[in-house]
Image 1 (cartoon, one colour):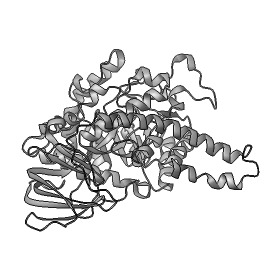
Image 2: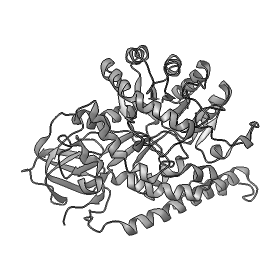
Image 3: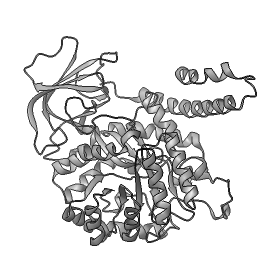
Length: 482
């Protein structure tokens, strides 16, 4: 907070009247908002740390601390097989050497004997909602930000300990939360933030009660005020909302192109933005040297997004064969989820339940088309609104074994998802190598009690099967004996 405060010292110094200066008042309001949120988050982090297991081995302090992980079998995030008899040197937050275990480690390094366990990259979830994942919809719509951020603080730590060291956040009030994670106030994964997802009146994510209709110009709904969704009707509003997310630090932009499951009043087959609207969002994102990803389930919504220049599609469970071929021909990315049963969702009813059943039924055909046309595909879980459901994050990855080998599934959650993150270009908040174990890559690492290439179900039980979680060179879990 001291560093943040110093950012505003020049405003106090330069203001003719500190009590009246508008710039200082805006800065003070921003500081107060950040303070309120991070104090809540910090309180949650303190509770987490107090309850953390005591088996964690201390690591050296200092920015350039060295850690050697010896006697490992290595899955590097790109290969089909393990490499045996390896040791990895971590210096600061980077992997600086990978060599044979008979090499003498640096004298000033902390050496951890891994007992021939498997080391792999930290996993990446390409479709996650950091602040919304564990918060029930009723609490979200109440607008109680203290409750929302406290629940999300605990969930961020659980996400990290499940082995997900990076997430691409696909919609929510994420910017202050990300700052708290990056500053070490909250333990959690790296976050590639989209900010509020951008939709139309009546589109997926428009959860306004009917009492808030009609929409008034300049009047924000509850879901807009907390930053979960922003409504935009027409090109000018689309441009405005996209620029607002980028101004706050978005690494990519999420735009809603069709209806969605969790929005009961938006049918999956509906279209939201016109092609001109979508193109306006793409143009602004390109001006900021990043990309747009479009939420779309049905063929015509996907085709419209591609025609408008979108780089990536979210979901696409109901796409047909011509649309799959078009995605392949245009080299479009698909970020999707292997939804296969009701266990993968919070309990639903009414129209949402019927839409979820439609998605379940279409999932196998979607993956057949992905494989047939060799579409660039990223994996994400998209678990929402329940701390019980988010425990299935790793289980969602294991569902891929129905269509992929274990090595292919693990590559998707590591190096392949890392390639998708790199599309953020100059808006990349963590420029560097993610999802791989190689020299120069970020030291985001997992040590497993078993071989996930033989048994991917190990990922579904992280408490028992992940012995070490390292993010950015810092150990967050180590259940090995000292």
